[in-house]
Picture 1 (tube, rainbow, N blue to C red):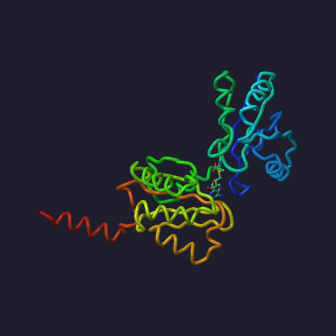
Picture 2 (cartoon, rainbow, N blue to C red):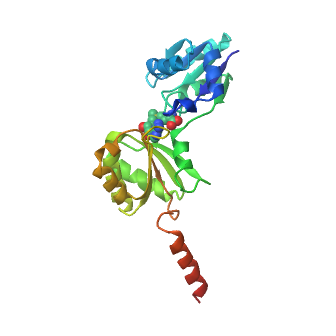
Length: 248
Ligand code: SAM
């Protein structure tokens, strides 16, 4: 029986591909790719000749059984998405779920993931966090989503699309106030990588000042209720500690 490898690919910088990912992609019999043209470019960059087939949101339920059949025939298969870790806001769930159901071997070849890359550099607490996927498309649902994320009391990582970012930040300010701290992480591992951490009103100003800054792939991170960090500078913290010791 074959193995299904869930292979992470870079989120921008091609040097982030792992040696094991390259070896796996070169060795498997077939590669299931979210977009075969996109993955074809990655493979040709690394001089890997492999058979690919499309596995995307619209066909993965049908393809899942076919993949199980191939695994049963002894074929090894790699599953990749356009960028980062498959199944993280990307296709593959139906396939892995069926493979688990029938007892097929599924193993990860870990690597880049925008959510993890962003939170690791956010300066927000990472002892507990949640990944909440893409923000909802509608304004009211988005405000509720931001409220729920904040009320969870832990750091929330979310994906956002470039054409929705300004509307989304407007909803964030409406839901939680325009002084709400937020971290914005854009174009991670790429030339124009940008981090911004501060009150949402300042982030809106920063992005409005140069609309170009709104373009690209981005992650938003919200601290949980009671976990905001930027508002308290080290100086202010010293003062608070001093006052606390002085207080009766
Ligand atoms: N599976 C991917 C991963 O592991 O991160 C995520 C795929 S999801 C369809 C694409 C979203 O991920 C983008 O809209 C953006 O929110 C985020 N993303 C992907 N690459 C990114 C990057 N280089 N910098 C910032 N965000 C990124």
